Length: 297
Image (cartoon, rainbow, N blue to C red; front, side, top):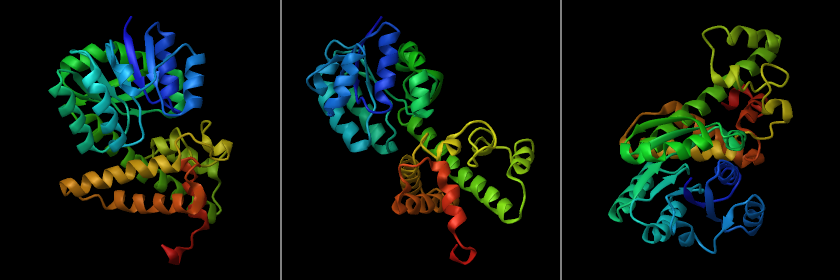
């Protein structure tokens, strides 16, 4: 078993750290929030006094943090404190440029580094079924695979440093676009007097087939259980979808890629959040669509 440092015990990080403890690893962790530290300690996680202390004698260090600047500031603390050969696994969803800078910093100190953002939400983090999209050197990836496998059900090595973040923002840009499309289809069907279950039966077995309908249908009482059946409690909050869409547009700006639908989806979810629905599941976009008038589009 390994000694694992862990920084970031929020809604995602804490259940991930708990799964590592459950698999027999020794986890030394820190979070700025006292309540998170207390809950983690009750779950058998050793609480450190600061970020750098989590890195000492660690075989691996996992970070799960809100944004690029915070990740980089934490790296500046943990990298000098880590022993040579330690692999840092950043599971945060951040911009590609910041991610590449973490790899550069880790390499300068003789450390391995992976960017490994996740898909699967809090449910996946709790169940240990997350999907990891990983960027970094193959040696670090192979070394870290047993640790990632404890926290996730699927791990995809996408390429060199930053490739995991690239895959995550491309995937979630498509997800945001497709959920708006699913909402529009069901909202139009309702206006036409079409039974929602009938439309689900058509889409789920025809050319409109997609995850946003088949697995995560935004209409309550239709399809498999989803946040729509729980008043759109997340799930994956609208504010988090907006974060990922903004990252996708930042990357598009930096590379010159044309993403007109991604831009529209970003504008839509920005309004969704501005209207006070950021804490609702992103599939709740259908409710916003139903309040819109045709001439306001």
